[in-house]
Image 1 (cartoon, rainbow, N blue to C red):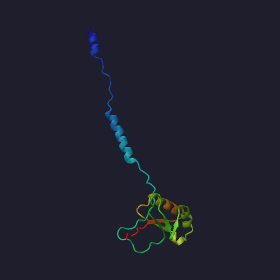
Image 2 (cartoon, helix red, strand yellow):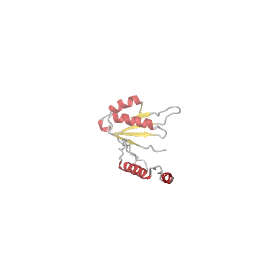
Image 3 (tube, one colour):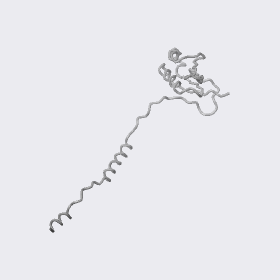
Length: 142
């Protein structure tokens, strides 16, 4: 009888695994990978922005594309290159035909409500046509 009693008291508790060291290791690995990871820079478009302050009264050098606000119900504004209205289909060929001395810079003058999509399309077409630099000009309010 004594043997049975000692056998019962000797029954071992079920083994429990301590999770704290494993959680510590996981957090240390997470911190290591977060610190050691490098991210590739996002490719972007280099643009010359006008300096802050008063607008320059001198006419900018280079090609100038003016984009007007879209009319009601329209998705894009009217584009004007060299004082003539131009469409997306014609802008690429027109930019290709420009003399090299003025082809180094394209200046975009857009009004407030012009969609960014339209401006980016113009920049893409200019880059494909060999325009080296793109800048923005501010039109003074009257």
